[in-house]
Amino acid sequence: MSRALQSEPIPPSDPLIATSCFDFLLIELVPLAQRITDEIHARDKILKEELDRSLNIHRSIPPPSTTNEVATKGGVSSTGAPSTAAGLDDETREALYFRLNNMGYRVGQGLAERFSTNRPRPVTPLETIKFICKDLWPLLFRKQIDNLKTNHRGIFVLTDVRFQPLSRVSVDRRAGPRAAEELVRRAQVYLVFPAGVIRGALSALGIEAMVQGETTEIPTATFQIKTKGAKA
Image (cartoon, rainbow, N blue to C red; front, top):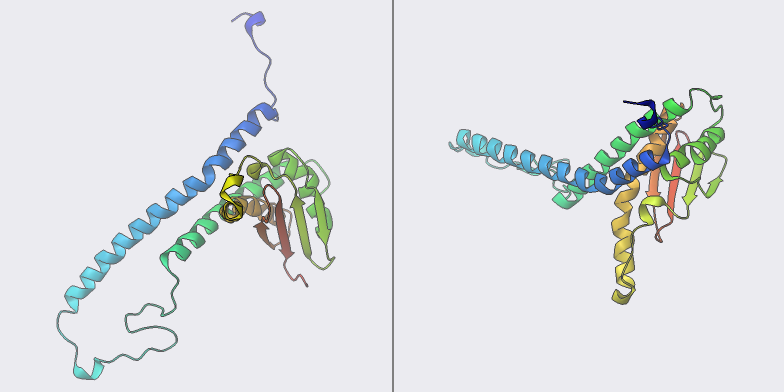
């Protein structure tokens, strides 16, 4: 190939590539995690049914009369299942959130390790949070965090007034206020992955914390960070 036809190499940080790939990932991430969770639950249900059938075969002979009655103790019924067990919907939602958060955690760890190598390492928790707001957040969402608040006792609140993953959603205003409320409720799941990213980045920089994302109005997103040992 002649030199005239060779194109210049594209820098790895070119936003035309990185941004598009990450946008596609965010669009498909929640449905993908939902499908994986549903498949796992379906498989576990089949295995449980097969196990129950196998146990019923061995229980075909009635036990002695002295063991016919089994008391329920410690919140466990005679079937061995917790009497206050959550329904399948809650269980599926919890598994979905756990999966998305762990995905974000691994991404956040990798990003923090990669982009903090050639710069001074943050010393205090506040410096670490500022690194995420000013340096890490633009890599993912093309803008800095708009507002950072702290009580100086281990609790931080990050606000992105136009959070990129929520900026593309819309609601039919003709459907009334309930449509907007439903949209806000459904948008919560899209904040689990970014919350995991923050948690992973903090972990890579030596800070253990709990991170919770929340939105009360599209497209604003708020992330509350509680570091280990934080005081309200």
